[in-house]
Image (cartoon, rainbow, N blue to C red; front, side):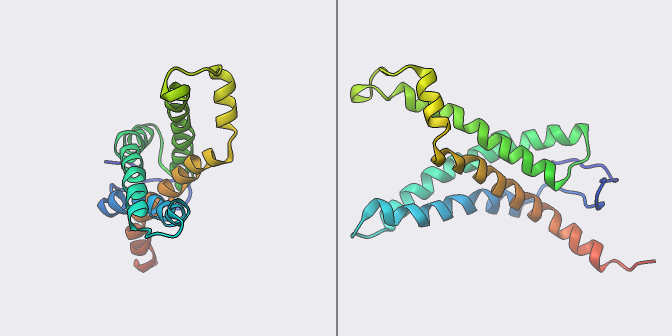
Length: 167
């Protein structure tokens, strides 16, 4: 799915679609997030319920972003230039930043009394939420997912390049 020129500018490593990367890369951040947030959500009780609840919800966002945003954008980017790890990571971070806006809009729309119409100005709400440190999770998650997908998609080629006889 991801086309790469035969002459990558840095190391000659080409990237191909990776099923392992497809299944593993978007799962890492939700697993870490669920492991961190589950104890905070439940207090003294069992952590199994909150862990799986957060894991399922975060995985829906993560896999949805991977399938409908990251892979198509990576493919379109590969049509215009050779892909590098930096480009894939930058794309993942940019998509993570781009996901912040719809989340803020949905939150603002239900921020009124009894989840009704908002009482606060949208611009004020947007700036306050966009600058919230919690929103850094999305660009960081995009970066980690993109880097892991890149590594899983190129590690076979890296291994083959190191084991190939040098002339």
